[in-house]
Each structure stands twice: as C-alpha cells, then as structure tokens.
Length: 295
Image (cartoon, rainbow, N blue to C red; front, side, top):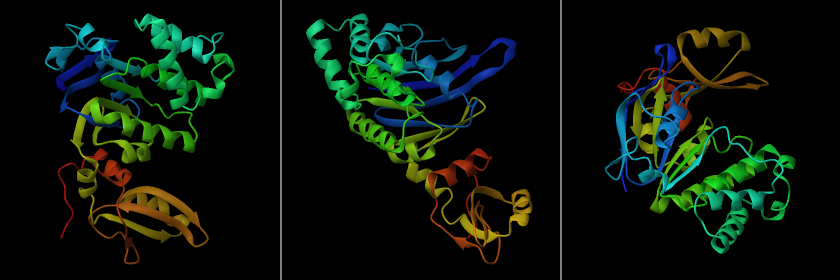
C-alpha cells in the first residue's frame, strides 16, 4: 500500500499554478496537510480523488497511475471534500443508504454499515432527521460517515473538523487515529492542533509547493530552543513584530504576552518555552527550512 506523488502540478486558466512540482511518498498512517489558504491543499486532494486531472507529473496508488487508471483508486477511496453537498429532504440514514447503493453496497450490508457509521459519528439519535434541518456540524459528521461507507484504504478529508465543536473534534481525531493503522489518511486542516494530535507525518505547503515533509517530532526539533515568551506594553507590539517573528499574543493585566520564534532572545526578560507545532509551522512557512538555532 503505497501512495507516490512525483513532481505533480496543476495549472489553471490565466497561467496560475495551484500546485507545482509536488512530490512525496507515504505507505501508511495519517498525512497532515498544513498551509495557508491558496497553498494548494485542496488542489492536491482533488487530483488524488480523481476529481481533476494534473497538468504535469504523476500520482500512483500501488504502482498504478491515478490519472490514467482512475478506477484503480476509486474502488478503495473515501473522500470528504471541503464543500460537501447533501439532499436536504432525505434523512441521514436514507442519504447514506442511497450513496451506499451508488457504490455497489447491497441492501442488508448497507443497512448494517450505515447503522454502524451513524453511531460512530455520534448521529444514531438523529438518523431519521431531515438533512436540511441538521446543524452545520451534524452535516459534517454525515459527510465523514459517507467517506467511510466502503471501508476505504485511502481516506481523503479536506477540513473535516470545520463546524465541529471541541468535543466532536477530539472524537473525530481519535477516530482517524483508530482508522489509520491499515490505511492511508490524508487530512487537511487549518487547525494546527488537530494535526498535532492526529498526524503521523506533516506536509507543509505554500504557494502550491511542498516546503517540508516530516514527522511532527522532527518539525518540533527545527525550533527547539528558539521559542520565547515575553510580556511587553501594548504600544511596543508593533515594533516587536517589525523585528521578530511573532506568533500568538495574549492580553494580560501587565501588558501583552507575545510568543516569539527565533534563534536569539528577543528581550533580556524573555523566557524560553516549549515549542509547539504551530511555532514550527510559523518558522518554516516564513522561509527558514534550512536554519538551525544558534548555540
């Protein structure tokens, strides 16, 4: 079970590249895709899900070219796009049974599978409610269930935790971790903590290109000894941003607590703190892939 991507690129009208010279290989686990809006995450997922064709390069599943033989991957694919459509007049169970039939899953098997999945995504009590009456988060959980209908070997989920409350997000992260043992999961999220908790490897993307692909602990090592917290006056925050890479800030009664990423102490009163994946993401996204902290 190997997903191999080799110099993959997608050019849109006007000559704009949504993806350019992207390449990596993964054989199991959860690959987290991390990057700002427009980084190319959804473009990559749409190509791998056979929704769109690449302009250049290739992607293969177990050695079979995805664009040339899309059925080779569609049989083992589960896909939840960022914009997931529903039939508002159907209830959750009817909708999932309809999709199951479209994928060739027979009646008795489909009913059993749908029941299991509705319980899995915590919608057992809402199975008879019309989809049009469900909240955004509940609709998203229906989308997660449909992606799992055929017990896929390759599961692609684009911003799956959007609209979910914190408890549901944790539930979904745990579900992905449980599923990842015998399949490949591609997970895109703008919530860094979701990837930090679930991903076995992370690909950071920017402007359609891959910046780095590594395990979370490797990414954390890139900013080891380089993350600081300092409390400053509110009026000094703009000046600090002009000279240092500032991540999160928090207002306190003493001023602004700023989190700074860089090899040098930003202030004599700054204290070194434990890095997070968000610190590493910020550092690498700003072009510091090859830099290491000063001794």
